[in-house]
Length: 378
Image (cartoon, rainbow, N blue to C red):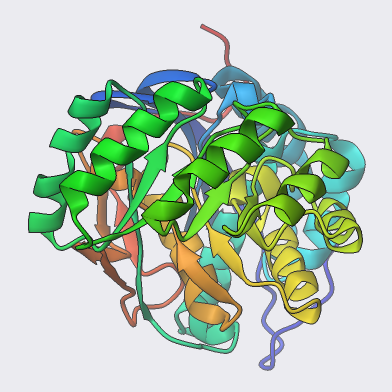
């Protein structure tokens, strides 16, 4: 049994854990070098305490990146994690996270969904927004918006509507081949005509030689950064690219864990790190990655998969809590045809503002989720 942490001597226990499918269509197919997505097929976790508080969490699997898939996440939460969570004090998040690490290897989505729900509960129990519990740096920040990979003129045609909405940072997906990618960036840069800064993401699509040549050819466009140019794991290649080009290199898929981040830092393989909750497997691990990077003088960005505003709000609280997280790529809710969340992170153009409500500061429309209380297969 979890020990009593409350000041008034009142135990808080987890009474119920539920999980279910939340499927939301995208406004248009979204293509990156790794593949095309047309629907968010996510898992929602709801954790309820004996005091009546409810915490929400979300997992957004991207199988080609993390190996997670929707059905597996649901089975992991209800079949493996639910029995461990029932009766526990939800405030003992580090203890629960360590237990999840012991009983469930991989399964990043299941673990992050549970952790997000636990931190939502923590804020609600103590009556404070999550970012304030973590030190409260700034509840307003700017996010970019991503232009998926397509024909150059189609990508260029998406620039003006985004500028009209107020976005001033655009992230451009490339990675098919260097020559065509050059045309894509040229078209987007011309359409933006200096009115927005540009970030580039190759999603592991180039070779080392191709990356160096392509990035050098793109230097005239004053790109802010180039993200994950070559297949993950090739730290020597990544370090070589960083040495040969003048645009900062960001590690994304290369960094899942704090240990990965430490290795990137030791090898001088990147200038920046992109933290994603769905890769890190939880908010605790994400904060450790940021702390390691900050210690090494390396700034971070917080990015996302194809997520709803539920887990995006959790990521936004992470951004708002740390001065070392200087960039955000939290645009996924803008891709979805519907929004099941009320409250939470509010986006106006590229500006995100967090509410001063406890926990994540949101509520979820339960009608958007097909809930189960036992492991389920279709």
